Length: 474
Ligand code: ADP
Ligand code: ASP
Ligand code: MG
Image (tube, protein in one colour):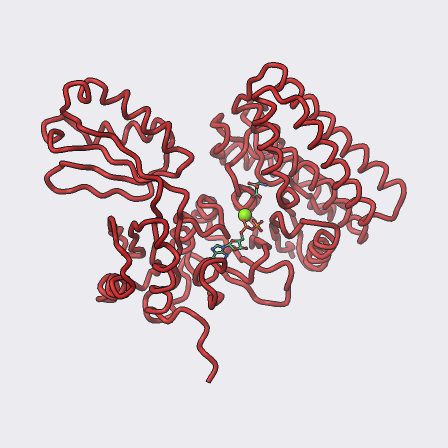
């Protein structure tokens, strides 16, 4: 009988230090007894941020930032290696691999500082160094347990377009390469340990899938290999009813649908990269979110249909690193195709539009994009509407960064009357001012815009209103 195949992904905190890596490696070992396993790993927590920060400094001519960071990463990774691996030949072999990666990093920082230019292409190579280092450590830790492993760079497997910083996979080519490279290893009972976050164009230029993208790497590989299950191991018990850093009494959701989880991820629930579920929808592969620090807990299962929890609302989410852009003024009624031109401009900038609201008189279109895209989008809009602004037909193109979107999510909301009313009553009681509202036609989410300073209060009010929290002890 064909063995089951599981793709398991470990996030930054799950590989944050030697003891976390050892715990995660043990999880892989236990699964490998019964199934074939492909492991996907993130960089050790904080490493990607540090790489990006040093790259930006190098880009402005700082020659020391890169060397300092490379020195620190050498110390951190070799200390972790020493704690994880006792066998001398393995330790030396892995240490050489780490050195090769670090030396490449050093050359990239030197070149960037010399040129005083950080291109998106270089930034992708630099920001992926963390995964390449951690994959070496993780493979060594699994092999220390007596399982044959291979550390593999996803640049060999995941073929993407050339959009640096947020590349999209080309599934046909990815399927071919992943099967050709990993199939024989799996047949021999090896556990491939693959770098998350990374891909490469068909010509072999490295790319990244966007921040937090290792979740997406796991589902891309899971789909390419037709895995039976994908398990995303992280530092919380599963998908929770709200962000635990903002709402104290959250609960773990046992089962949730692709659509609900995608809505949560899209509106900021950090536990999943927004694109994660795209890859598994066609084949209906279940995705689990589980806690690598408490592997005995069941976690959340994400499936095509989810399971209803009654009541309609399943979870809340909020996103605050977004900006509200408005294009308008009374004069824009006469400007041809304002809506079309506005959104072709956002599409050209690849700025994901999270919410749109337009008044019926067409005096004002407002929409929300991530803060990272706001400035470039506004500049592009000002270019697009330059003539109209000059003639004061378009009066303003403005941006407000001090806002947040809060989303109320649940597929069962469809056909449950009164959810919008209850949400806004609860906010009204707390004096939270709502700036804009949108409800998708799927009715699996109601999202609204509030001032950033009211975000937490809005979440707490809605969480209480829909009794999403843990029941109070009686
Ligand atoms: P990893 O490094 O494993 O990828 P992340 O930090 O990217 O982990 O995502 C996990 C974190 O997401 C949790 O620690 C939690 O603080 C945050 N989070 C935000 N919203 C939610 C939610 N609804 N459910 C679970 N976790 C959430
Ligand atoms: N290390 C990458 C990041 O921090 C990818 C990931 O962790 O998923 O964005
Ligand atoms: Mg993550």
